Image 1 (cartoon, rainbow, N blue to C red):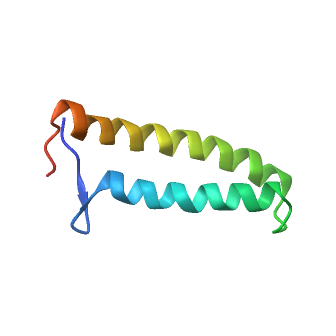
Image 2: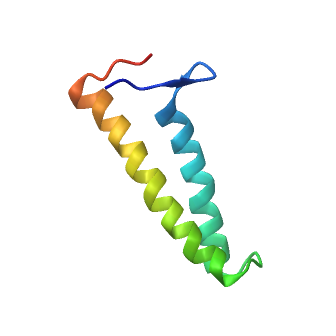
Length: 70
């Protein structure tokens, strides 16, 4: 298993940035500071779980299992 590169950076770096944006949207929509449809909040939560799982997989793979970055 290897960690792919996107624009010169490992994918788990990009997934971390996407995760930060999604968490911010989740908090803001949950607190009703921004107006989004209710279904967005639920779909966003599912997307956060999926992206976090992939982010953790690659991060732990690099840290503990010596996944090469290609």
